[in-house]
Structures are given as structure tokens and as C-alpha cells.
Image 1 (cartoon, rainbow, N blue to C red):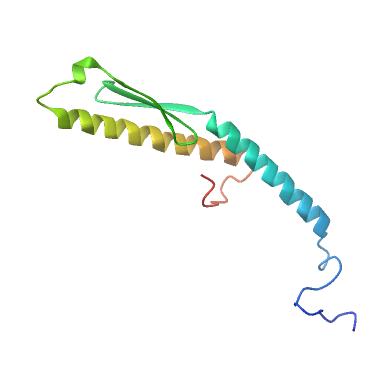
Image 2 (tube, rainbow, N blue to C red; image 1 turned 60 degrees about the horizontal axis):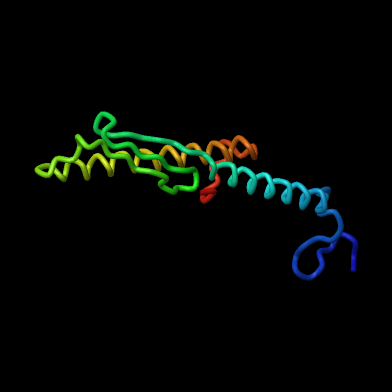
Length: 122
């Protein structure tokens, strides 16, 4: 086989045109480890949100789990259940959005992936 010809399968042999595959694989493994560590750290993050002037308070973690919901007894109006439901929804959605942003920020800063826009990190 001529030295400059590609073998079957279409992949050149050797160092891939100057790219050291071992070094590339080590870098990929290191990045994967950093990503796993950042994701674990992000799970420990907690954010809070409130609605209705603080009548409903929600705490969520970086792994999108609700940790607590606190409802002020003054928010319990049997004649206006819909208002309480709306406050709960608003606080939960705000907490989950904040948790997602905080977790993504943690992963981006720990791995240097900020601005790369990699979908599916969380």
C-alpha cells in the first residue's frame, strides 16, 4: 500500500495528520471528569424564589428537585384558591429556572465550556 493512500475504512493511519490521538483522548477523559465533578457540585446548589410578596416560598436544588415549599397562612383564602395556585406555580417555575441557570453556570465555569452552548448538559 502506498504511504499516502488511505486504508479501508477511510481513516488515515498513524498520527492523523499531526493530531496525537492519545493526547486527544486524555484531554477528552479529563474534560469528562471535570464535567461529572461540576454536575455533582451543581446538584448541591440551592436557590429560592417567592411569589405573592413572599407569601409562597420555594427552594429548589441544581438537579431540578424541589426541596421545600412554604405557604404563609395568610395566603390561605378558601374564597380565592386560584390565587394561591398561581402563586405556587410562579414560585416553583422561578425557582426551577434559577436552579437551571445556576447549575449551567457552575458546569460552564468548572469545565471552561462557557459560551459553547452545548445542549443537554442538564
